[in-house]
Image (cartoon, chains in turn cyan, orange):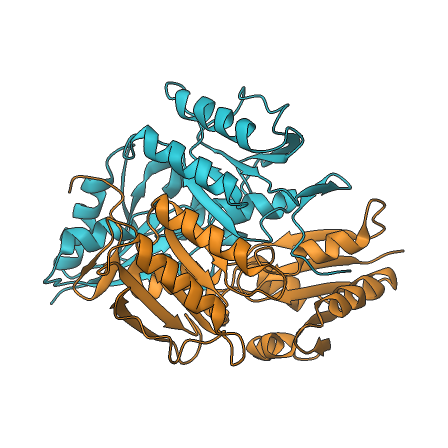
Length: 243
Length: 243
């Protein structure tokens, strides 16, 4: 008899911002599968549980491992940081199981990085928001550029995921050039690293003054819309109430 | 001495999908402030705690109540469903406190409806996503239409919040007309009511066949992008891996 798979969003990476359902899915699993640094964030939660961890760009192998373990009758938790769907593992597991799935899959959502970063900064994402990954490993750069431009022109607040790695610096340069073309120089920008995880750091700046130095894959950038402002050091996008 | 305010996103509305931090903020509060139906979702969590609940469109009054209670020295939890920021109360509280805040405010993020609905449907939000509210109470309808069009044209998966009330049916009609103009008729659409809350219901349909009947303010609509497909009854947007 087949086991089952929970694809679990663990949230920003501290146990306190994980949901009860995510915690239970990990505690009850026979096997926890995930990217090594994410497994480390789970700390005591995986004590006494078998862990199958692996490295970067091994997403397909991890999904296959999870399916193999479930077919062997085990209850498996596949963990992603943030949400289990957005840039996470849920889609891949369902794709691999295909049209005749022989394993039950439950997706357990989590708090994605944009909302963790927003909470640190104040309330920048109060209104319509676009979530965009700047990683061009799986998405052509022109598609990313088109989305950044469309979101800025239409007045979305924008959250940029995976903004910059040691070798991949061009997408952020291009995105900032587009944003600076479309939006006012004074548009508030929040830069949050390790949002709601050990060692959280955040700064509030403007589109004109934003410096790419220090922005890496653990950073989330939040770009305001035309109404966004800074109140007592925190970024706030008014919803439109008349307070 | 002033108390403090936690603006808390309780997630989709069941205790299991609430974060530990949200739960703690509610349990430790002297006063819990919120929209009446949201307070009811908290069940036992508010037992023995003073509750200040109120009705629709009383957001400003609720934020003022929270600030008054905090100034009186109390620890206050202001609750929103989903996230505390997105279409939530965090911005309003910070706006009202202004440039010289005399009360500490902590924002506690939660799982927003789009991700709860996505988990129910499969993995529709794997890739870049636009979150759009169709409520035109606070946003002019042309701005909403512009965002729907921009998001569809740029290839975002789209989550529509607050799609339709008993009296407010035009924004959904307009949004669907735009989506049907821009996207293929076969684009997968997920319709989820009370996502991950008691009585969750979901259906998977297409843009051509979507019927507005039964869509209300407790419904979230997820509209796929050009790559989104239905696999074994679940909506999946491939990230782009080659499995």
